[in-house]
Amino acid sequence: MHSLDSLLSLWEQYLPSLLLGCQLTLEVTGIGVAAGLILGVAIGSARAADVPVLRSLARGYVDLLRGTPLLVQIFFIFFALPILIQVNLRPLTAGTIAVALNAGAYFSEVVRSALLTIPTSQLQASQALGLSRLATMRHVVGPQAFLVALPGILNQVTISLKDTSLLAVISVNELTHRGEVIIAATFDALQIWAVVAILYLLMNAALTLFGGHLENRLRRYTA
Amino acid sequence: MDLIVPRDSSPNALAERHWLMRGSPVIAVDSVTKRYDGLTVLNSISLAVHEGQVAVLIGASGGGKSTLLKCINMLEPPESGKIYVEGADITAKRADLRQLRARLGIVFQDYNLFPHMTVLGNLTLAPIRVSRLSKDEARTRAEEELRRVGLEGKINAWPSQLSGGQRQRVAIARALAMRPTALLLDEITSALDPESVADVLSVVRELAAQGATMLIVTHHMGFAREVADRVMFIDGGSILEEGTPTEVFDESKEERTRNFLRRVRFA
Image (tube, rainbow over all chains, first blue to last red; front, side, top):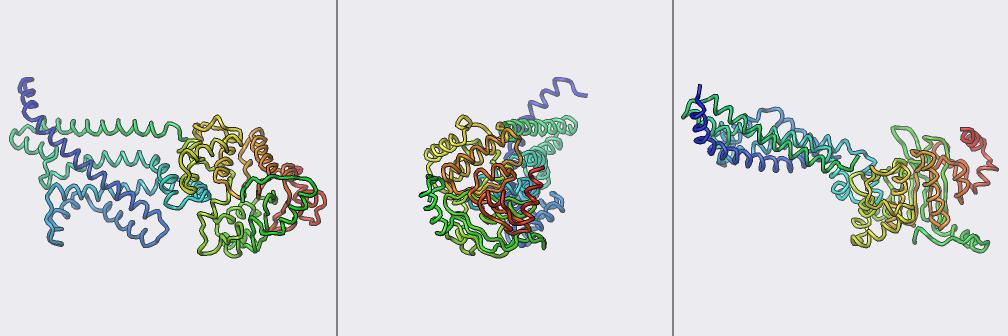
């Protein structure tokens, strides 16, 4: 067991490094989730669209990305893609792309099911007023679907944040990887893994808190 | 052409209106057929609504009345037949649907207000996006139409804060804010409690008195008799009998019309 002194000195020594890891974790999550959301909206809309070709393509994408492990996707983009096409990606880039592609597949399902909850009568009311399909999407269906999708989106954001820990396997210096490196030097698995876990927990707690707040604000008047 | 044209009921004016009716109608439906999964809902139906006229469609539920209204602004495209709005063929492949739809105001049974917008947002969305009014112009117009339906105090309310009758009056104001040439009213009181029904009908009565061109689907026969210039009885997907309220309600020639009227009177 550690004395309180040695515990504090351990924290003092390694916390700054772990916090830097948190920063990178948040950056990868932020970029991955933002790109994933754009992808998800595009693919989810395609899946709800009336064009059979688009629907099948979108369906294929979702099946492929949901049906394979993220870890394999990371390995594929980092190790296999350079063989297939002559591009060498930095680990951080490859990892972020994998997180984005993966989150995009799940987001698209959230978007699709949210779109399905908006009654046709809303579309009809909008088109009857002379609004185009695009304007109807933007002003009538989109905002309502977003509110429905929000809990699902937040759920996937917390999952993606944890998923970034898999980037440790290609040596991206995010939180989990930094934990591993410190343990390799100190052999203090218990202390460090506990701190790493708590840091993930805190990041997600902040996210959940923010998400709940956002949801309450948006939901204030709509029935 | 504007929705509200001054109406004068002096004999002279009536004669003039009669002459107008021989001109091109605001809405003309020519042999329209609509099927759902092999079931013929509208069977080669034809009718015309002229400027300043209030036409009321009556008939049993599932008789195709609501479908007809949705065909008229192409929310439900018909299988065959033609529909003209102010002389323009809205069923044509190259028809400017958006522009023609904006000429027709439709009010639905379930209001279909946009729940994520305030009353102001509901009333200004299409005037800003479709008619390209400025925000200020659209607001002025919204205030005007809310006054017409007696809800000027509710401009900043959310739909969820309004009663059914208030929501339906907002829906009417939303349609009017586009300054349509004709209004299509699709059983607009069916989802309301009796008190709200009276409020909504009085708005429609007022519009009729001001000379609005309207095609109304309703189950209130007393109301139909009161506001209608023309009553059309739909049966089996086509118009079985039509005429003035007196002709249809008191002197109906068809046995099926009389049966229907007897049933709804005792309902």
